[in-house]
Length: 445
Image 1 (cartoon, rainbow, N blue to C red):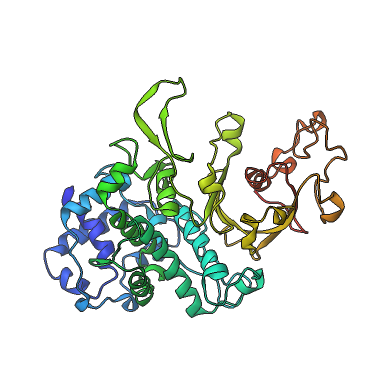
Image 2: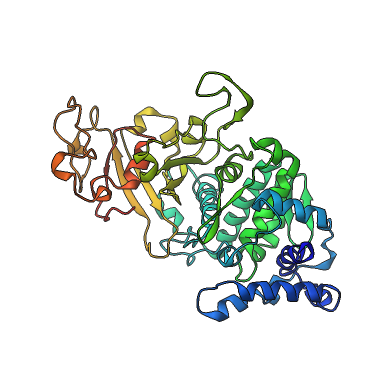
């Protein structure tokens, strides 16, 4: 079984290299056949040839044998399996193996956007999406605080590649404590300068983009190797913790993995700093680790099920108020991205009176970026200043039940999603009591 598990990871690494032919002629033939046998037993969605494509090696993904690097040892393979999956008996499912970082059409309305329809890898794709937006709006040479959504449509194929390379290297560099980063392809390639990481990824961007490359898994391996197994064990509250949680149909990202992607540390909690006392006021045997530093891109979370149980976790300001106005949103356990083109939104309180937010779900069914107008319920901006299309607020600002998303007796049997869309509720975790207009878009979530 250990040989079989090693083969599965080895196959993924080998799939991005022209050296596979040599390995197939050696002892690895038996191992790869074992893996294929395991894949045949898995339930794969139609059409069947899509699964077969996962086992093929596109020529364009070839990596030069002269690049060097450090070999991936069996010990590292076992450690990767334990820290990611919790043991040696679990494998990545079909959705994970097919997941890559694939853009929409260049120079189109969604030229900035990645496709991320479903599966456990979606959360990783959406964090990378947030960093892509940050790069395109605020980090590239042409960016400024006067950027508009239109600038995200003027993105060609090469600019897409650069943005993806910058986004991937951002997370890897943070995981390596801004001192080093490791990229896992056929070998382990470690760099001590961020520009070198970005350039290396850009030179081999097809390994993360192309069908059959297992691009998201390769990035996940790179992230873990950049952080190192030892540091990850220190980050987590429990020595038995791992980063992916088994759920019906797939393995999903735990909060520690999302925090690792966002901040460079796999802290398992959303609050700021450390907690040394439990809810009973007594000292904890092991302190709980929260978020210790402000992230470049933020994080918001809302769940109807958690809210109804009174178990909705509070997100600390380190994540809620990032350096750039881009947020990964976990809404009813599905990740998406909310952003503003105005960087001063986070530094000038006057900008929060009335502003625009843009929303991208990652789903192929979304054909345009949703634009929402957000304003104060009372104060400098009245309801008349906001082009409300849905849910006008009540006239009284002092009414204790004046929030338009609160249920009234007559609405008790109505659809709660229509009364207070989950996306609106997520936004209000950051801007409490905000009035939100959808500008002609039908509310979703």
